[in-house]
Length: 54
Image 1 (tube, rainbow, N blue to C red):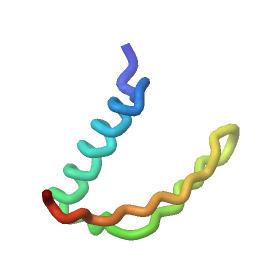
Image 2: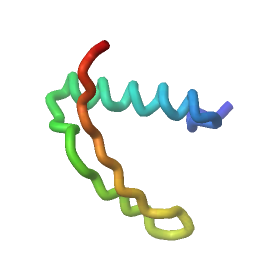
Image 3: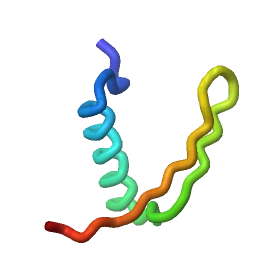
């Protein structure tokens, strides 16, 4: 069984867990991030913005 997300819902859950872990560790996560992957994988530009709670 793979730990990598296989669906959009699993990706969202894994991303949420990573963001919570980073925030708990005091990492400043808001802003833009370049994710350079090299090789056969595409590069990504990721923007993280904190949302107001409902």
